[in-house]
Image (tube, rainbow, N blue to C red; front, side, top):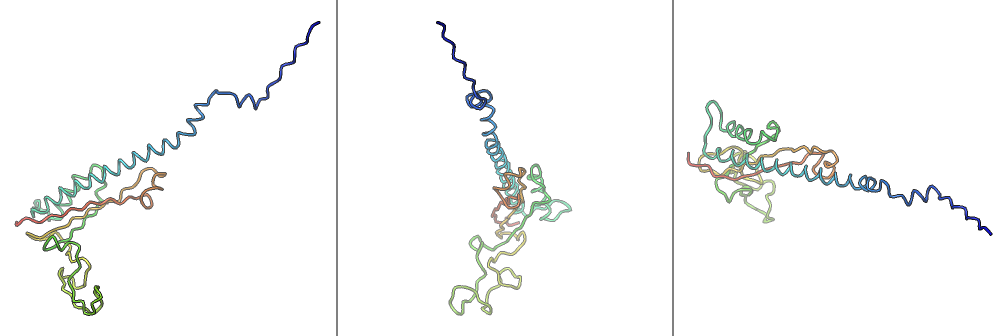
Length: 196
């Protein structure tokens, strides 16, 4: 007697697809690659910003070293000479037209960031309207920082602050860092002018 062979079960297409391993690596890469690319772009972007910060600090230091000597190039003011040094040092990476520089002068180091002295008539620890004060910087109004703007004279202490609005290149990364795609970089250095 002959036994009839069982008919083969026809596999369903969905089950066959579920068991298939072809192209699985491609699918896994497609899932992982966006996250990996985001991490790589973020690292490159932050590396560029850190390099720009380093360039800005180096340029600020070089400019302040020249500024404290009182030197000014021929046919230039002292401020123009300092700005030219900033341009030379930072111009490789930064748009020098967007670099802003401020300088505050003080008589001594311990005055940096201090308010102008005043007579606290009511003893509340704050200057109120009408209380007398010493106008150290000579601008006619009370200031919470007694520094006068400018590059200072011989022997004065100068605080140079240089800032730059670094534009984050990658739009997706700009959502995580900075404000509206701008990361504000700044460098600050304090020097005492030489007795020139």
